[in-house]
Amino acid sequence: MKWLVSLVGAGLVMITLRDLFHTLWHPTRHGGLSRLVMTALWRLARRFRARRRVVGLVGPLAMVTVVSMWAVTVILGWAIVYWPHMPGAFTFSPGSEAAQEPALLDSVYLSLVTVATLGLGDIAPAESWLRLVSPLEALVGFALLTATVSWVLEIYPALTRRRVLAIRLALLRDSDPTTQQIDCTAGALLLDSLATEVVRVRIDFTQYAEAYYFHDGEDHSSLAALVGYADALARRGQAARRPEVRLAGDLLAGALKDFAAILDQRFLHTGGTPTEVFAAYADDHGRSRAQP
Image (cartoon, rainbow, N blue to C red):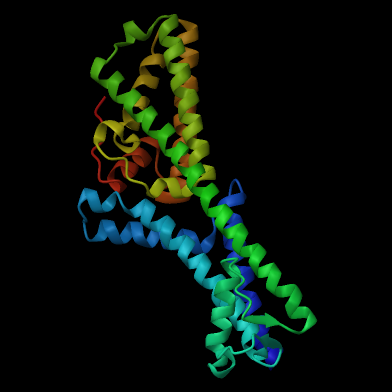
């Protein structure tokens, strides 16, 4: 029975590590538990029509919630591993009153200080297998801390790339170039560079799906509000006379179609055309689409 309880704790730890792996280190997957948490917070904010300032906190709050969930599950999982063997399989420092406390409390305490890599030493494993497991927990705790820092450092550059593309589209919308103005070498280079930026954002949504749940502030920096104008520019490029401009327009249209497919497959699930997907994207972020 003791080993069965310990196996339950080990199972909790493995579920957490699997979720962490697919969220942070698998380039095309997203962890099931973390995805559920982020989606639930996003839908909750939309259902109650929270103010924009509150909606802007959903992304950071979701990341904090997911990291806290990982940490709590790892701590509880290892505590359950220790629990059936406490206190008989452990040694206590002289004068410590820990042995007089409930076994579950001691197990949670030991797991907490171990995963935090504090190692206070007032409770130490005595049996050989526990002496191997305890340092392994400290290693997992250090890996969790490192992964959290890496996650933050990776997600914000992705948000910056998305917002830069949105601001660039906003500036183009304000200047509103005609088909004749785009029908030149500079126009072809413009459309080609936009296609490259759209592909980068598409990859960001694939590798960092949690970026979807970050609000972009004002409309001029929101890709959800401005991606429709990129579609209009692609159509103008496709209608140009110069072959290089038409090619660049086709590239941008293809990049937008691929981007819409990723949005629909991973987040929106409309099954519609790219135009319908972009409209749903704008609506999901509380935006009105930029008119061509």
